[in-house]
Image 1 (cartoon, rainbow, N blue to C red):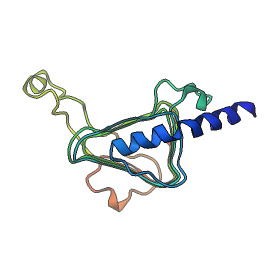
Image 2 (image 1 turned 90 degrees about the vertical axis):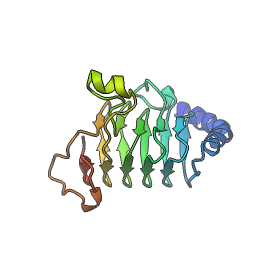
Image 3 (image 1 turned 30 degrees about the horizontal axis):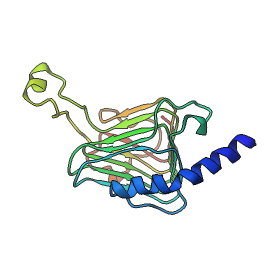
Image 4 (image 1 turned 180 degrees about the horizontal axis):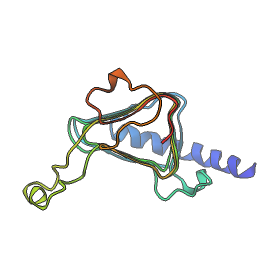
Length: 184
């Protein structure tokens, strides 16, 4: 297909700039990555973004038939935040924002324009917002191996695991967790 040849050529031409962007933000480059367009990276000093080998990020609207509404966002909001993604994962116009911890297993696919956020950006009460606008509640999110998160999904800290997949013992205090093979 001619559009894929043009897309691959464009990806390879943009590769040095994209790689420099990851280095600038202190995110180690992995093996066998396919990055289509520059993602938005916001790494808080002291936080950690760890991305596994075989990663695919699609940020260009023409890189996927879903016509992405925004590039991939990889963001940590606090000094001790961790955003950890396993091997062979794919994200299409996905927003990932961690103030505490987001852990995503191996072979996870996240559909177009989905968001995974582990905190409320601000307190829910007017009094709480007046006291500290940035003091939103947090809870870690764990998404297990082989999960497909459907397009347009919103995974938040308050979401609880449903379905027949067993809860993982390593979920810790996570309020949001998905087991292998689940789709949400």
